[in-house]
Length: 319
Image (cartoon, rainbow, N blue to C red):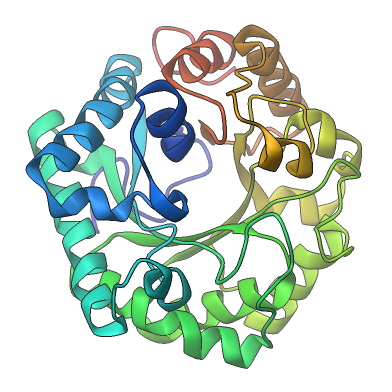
């Protein structure tokens, strides 16, 4: 994408919202059955597409009202070969699934926003294995080869960017970043951490970001933290260190529970939207470059609205 106030990569002062916890909202609040926690099969029916559209509508509307940008994710977190196999979707069919997801998102953008420059289409890449555990672990070279077909599908369908989400060990993140660079797509890397502020691999967030930068030539446009509550990583973000300035996005969980506790939960823990929003505001006061604001597991539009109230006045100017 080129030209316009919200061209990618965005300037440091351009604020973007994202959605909240897509899968947790669909399952726990909307009663939608998502085998393997995969939302991409919803694209196969008009009813499923409407459920996705109804989910995204309030988020995009809020971004328009706040005069900020919006990063519109494709519902493709599980659209890779390992998870596709569990859902009887072949690798060949996955290429069309991922391209269709980008086309669907672009159509939704065009229907809900008068200014397409405000809405960036983001191809979402999830982990090969479980987002909460380091399984199916690969080398960086293996990860690049594994994830490249999905990234290529996003490029062929004209996505604006790609994001590796819920990364829990550095090698997979490095491989995806390399794949995106080789295919000419801007990449964002989003790590998740445990309650001790470390990745599930045991590596510190600092080490994971610095190593990914070092081994990719600083190719990621920026980094994010997702799928963890602010209390889990607040102490891992010291002020004034160069590596923390690479973190520009935050998509926290609503709940302060551990990943293991969330994995065993049969009910949604929505946490406290107002408290979560205050924590976002406090982090932004320390890390003024934080400009991509959204949610992850357990969050819905109430949480994003509260984050806007805490971090953005009506004009959309960040505070």
